Amino acid sequence: MQKYFNCEKVQYEGPESKNPLAFKHYNPEELVDGKSMKEHLRFAGAYWHTMRNALADPFGAGTAQTPWDDGSNSIENALKRVDVFFEFLEIMGMEYYCWHDRDIAPELNDLAASNKALDAVVAKLKEKQAETGVKLLWGTACLFSHPRYAHGGATSPDLNAFTYAAAQVKKAMECTKELDGLGYTFWGGREGYASLLNTNMKRELDHLAAFLHMAVDHAKKIGFEGPFYIEPKPREPSTHQYDSDAAACLNFLREYGLMDKFRLNIETNHATLAGHTMEHELTVAANAGMLGSIDANRGDPLIGWDTDQFPTDIYGTTQVMMVVLGMGGFKTGGLNFDAKRRRESHDPLDLIHAHIGGMDTFARGLKIAHAIREDGRLADFVQKRYSSFDSELGKKIESGACSFDELEKLALNGGEPTLTSGRQEMLENLINEFI
Ligand code: XLS
Ligand code: NI
Ligand code: NI
Image 1: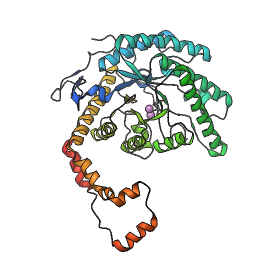
Image 2: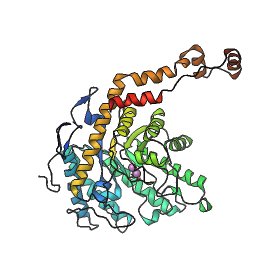
Image 3: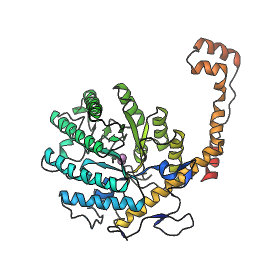
Image 4: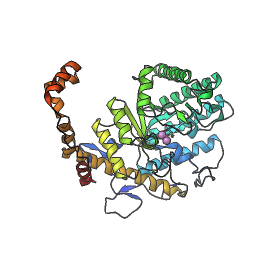
């Protein structure tokens, strides 16, 4: 038995196992396409949900049982949580993790005191990383919980709030660097607005860009090489969020000359809130060479907010892994379980069950996606669907060397184009052969 969790390290037992505390599909060292499953999937634990989410909802208090936590805002309590979290990672066999500054250490009376608390916890995290080989996938600053950020951090109309946010991000970047973090994330929780009556949108976006350029400069100064990630989300908590979806983020990054240093961190539930599929958002990002990392979770089709549920849908994880394999795998990113248990699942053991489910579902998605790619029929179909563009004329159009005049002449003589089927249902059946 472990010290804080009533279970042993979770082992792979195979699909026949009936043990609820075993992996049925995730076999970390098993090779898929010449690379181990753990290298493909790069699972990360989210400190905020695992250690700090009390499982409250707007109608009731938190239910999570955390016998290790004394409920205080003390540094000792924060240090104790580090031990618990690393035990959890060990049980799961997860080699990466992510944090917000305020999840790992308390916010105290002033910035200097909060920074000092952060230093103490970061020192302990560094020890634990060295002891276990666990790596920091990304760090981030929480610029959305404290009342000072009610109007935003980098987009606040108040210069003092903007200044505070800058100092907080500077420190969080330095802590990420100290822990050899592979990336650093910006999710703009309050970077948006509720009403245009009181908002100068143009000025707020200019400020956000200035803020991110300062982050780029500071990264250079401290030698932080990892990419920055922007995490799109369309609403909640702001009514209108500036980073609403992958396309909006790419447009913003291009407009303000930030494409080099940034990538996107795409989250499933945010994609669906934006009225897109996860597959769509990932494809938009990957097409631009900008898919950096993934927050793995899912929403609920009946609920219109960010329910952050654990991924259990095999179709969903298959689609995700099709895109990830298609781009040649993660470089600095991974699959971060930005997911929480339901309020009714308050026992620490539920954390283990939840992650087993997420990891097994992604393991299946990986194997299925690989099998579909190996089979080749799907890619073949898509390739053939566009094959008329492989002609001389097609090449001319694709290279920008054609004109409307030329095409008009051809259309006048060519007659009616023949219609061919898109065969969507046939392809859906094909996918089901593998699931
Ligand atoms: C909230 C976001 C958040 C980011 C990190 O919806 O998903 O958890 O991942 O700030
Ligand atoms: Ni997220
Ligand atoms: Ni989210």
